[in-house]
Image (tube, rainbow over all chains, first blue to last red; front, side, top):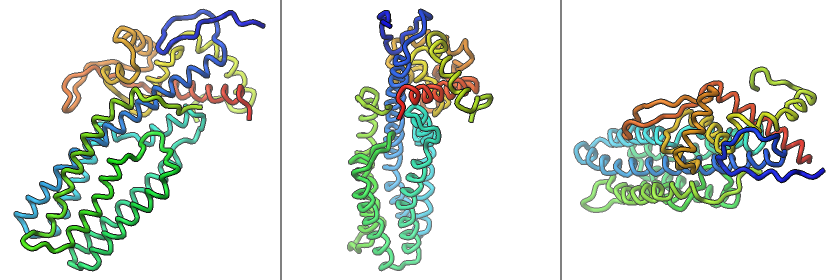
Length: 239
Length: 118
């Protein structure tokens, strides 16, 4: 049976009726919709990361001010932690939210009903890898045990590098691809922690964290600059 | 699993047969509108400006698409205030819209499986 040459509809074409479309046209429609959604999610995630890094870039400066005014290490660490949580909350409102729901929607578009489970486990593992050495380092710093500080900073650094190497080939996260600027930020945290354990004459211990500011500023600006490009990047996410 | 969804091969088969006619007209007949609803499934709400950028449609076409979705009860369009962004036109998905797009995507999955058996 010949088909009667129904013109394929363009994206966003809103005409009504005109008979049932071919089934393959419906599959094509799903694919087009999937591509739009996929690009949109990547844009949101990149923009959210940009804002997150930019807000975070002020924290080392604020931390230095707090540290200069007060000699309490505990106060400095608590201030930094409050700052990170505050930045996270702000970033959520600008796009770093609903990662789970984004993955679930992509799962629906790709054809898997469950969606998101493996991604969430990956996120939890990643957060664990990033956070536990930070907590351990903060504890060692407050306790004033310099060898443990160095140990946890080194463990932190090695963990991140190892995670990066192990996941380099199978980085298939549909929403956030870990880019150079993301890893620069991540690796600079333990590097700053390590630097802060070095005694520099005339400088206080927390000054080591100051060099995070330009790195975070650069990464934030680059992410914000790159975010709109995600909307026009050619991709092939939905089979 | 969404409410009222039929289970079993027969029910799925019947819904797949209905899909072409459902998708030939109505709010889910264009990929842009499907994309808008699918994205809103994750974000819940967005602004008109972001929609225009993301879906890459002219303002008039986007207005038509949103009017169609709004008339079907799938989205609400209202003026609102965004912190650090000022007054904006906000598009928000409704529970009916969530159900409709979820059912539509699940049907499309079944259709794809039927057409591309493995």
